[in-house]
Image 1 (cartoon, rainbow, N blue to C red):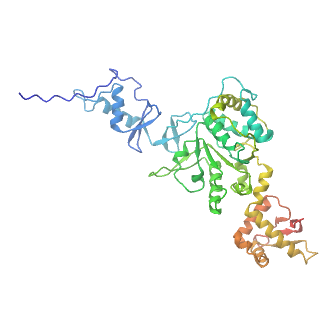
Image 2: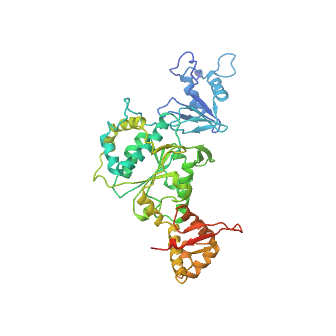
Image 3: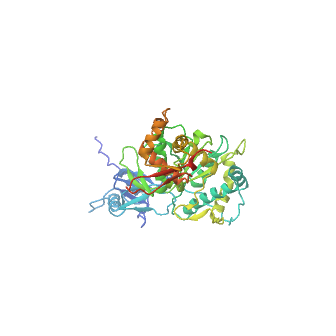
Length: 447
């Protein structure tokens, strides 16, 4: 006897008889991918295809089968509702921001960040209590003045995270001897306090344009990797540092996807050795760049550091201090970045001496000494950068100008930089023809 074919039994889910009123609240439709976001997973927001989303809906009471006189099953009808009423243009890892939906220009973006800052201790901490080892570590590392700058920089960012509105701020450069604890600060303190650190060297040096992997990290780190690079790489790095600090948004790129302009208000932390070669990785020390980074000099501290786990119990107390510490008006100055742009004087002097501008300065000094040697009554040389280039080329028998790639245009830029550094003996003077005219006086001569 032939058996009748058995009717396929639909999948059985442990679902409520009637879907809850808010059963769709943690679903969104991503019209950029054609998939659905669901927040009920151990990873937070999860991007699912249609079939996986319907299975999720079935667990919440939306039947997969159509009932009598129904054009759509309850699950399909729920999908349609999500598509029509809970659509987003895409997703964005908006760390520390409280909004579930971020409105950016004309876009609605789902905030998928899983990064969380460390909560502060519940008790008031206007004084550095509860984290004695960390406090002593930073005092030994920086000294009192630089420690105040560091904690003010840290507090300005942490308070903005507490408020759910991460603010822009200066890049932090820390230079010191090998083994002084520069990287320990990033890994054992900043990473657990702010939730994530992204390695940004290749992106900031122009070697890798795909930065979506680090875009959700509040801290970007560069660790002594630009010091031996060529002039073009250093120029790219300097421009990238300026852009990261000064701009509210820039292009986020992922593999096989078109780049999109997104906000990023984290912090860049660069650690390096304090030798002349490593100091070359500092951005330009002239003009508008100086207010965009802080430069601290680290000192050798300990032969051996504790484990990250041993330090962690002190960090909630440090976070409470960042929340409650009184502002130093000499450091917490408000304005664009909140904190004064401090630069350690010895490191800045070394950086200037290693810069192409300083080499140009020395070449001009040597030429000017020769030019003044048979002109005892002449007080100054005047001319434009082109005339100066002619004078220097006639004096330069060793090809220094060629090695520095000096032209009238670059000479003019270097003269302007030296003027901005308030180098005595160089000034720009009015020209009746409207051209560039500079005066070099005997004050410029070597002592």
